[in-house]
Image 1 (cartoon, rainbow, N blue to C red):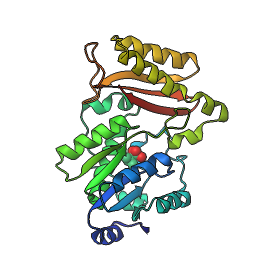
Image 2: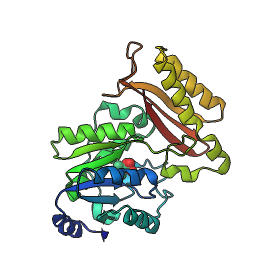
Image 3: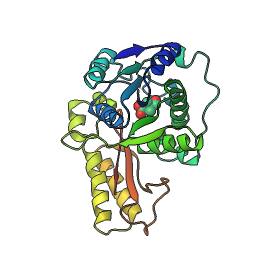
Image 4: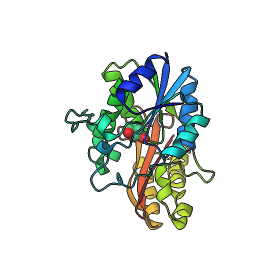
Length: 276
Ligand code: PAF
């Protein structure tokens, strides 16, 4: 695996690779990332990964400084996964000047995650566009765990006519249902034992809708209350249409819906979702 740090080195290395699939990450890689690499590999002979903790998508109160940085372990995982090229720029490479040109995502970016993480998707869309310009992949893979991010990246790619196919990777879970996430590392032992409740509550909403219950708002409210009762601070539990993440109505049935949730457990904010 070749590791490049500058855009010039990246362009030189990329030119020799031909058709390329790309997995952008912020590092601290786990089995979820490795599954995205495997998915990417099904679509192109070569795979590139980026590791860049993107300050633009963190609010000042968030965990940018303490976000886990585990570069050597990440490289070992990527080598084992057969990755061809790793782009690992630092901030002076990707943001040599303050980034004043920012992608303005549509109104849906102010809902769900965006309602609790102001300008999060401005930061995500801007860095993804920059990474796409630098890496110039034919295919890029994003995890379904970040469902809203996946939708926003997919729509941005389409609206800017970028010749990149966006692939969606299934969420990889621990045996107890907890979605794999770099932020799981922040959990204490007691919190880790409690953490699968988020998935369990979303699964209850999913199963109730599959079973014919149509009052989706009451179901979502019930799930948020159950989390609250177990000591969580829920930000949202919401049933949305998969296509555009618009609020679901009672007339929407299974096959077109997704339930999304985010909640704090102690100081750690976890998100998850399940298609219905
Ligand atoms: O999902 C992530 O890890 C990040 O949001 C991404 C897509 C790498 C952009 O920084």
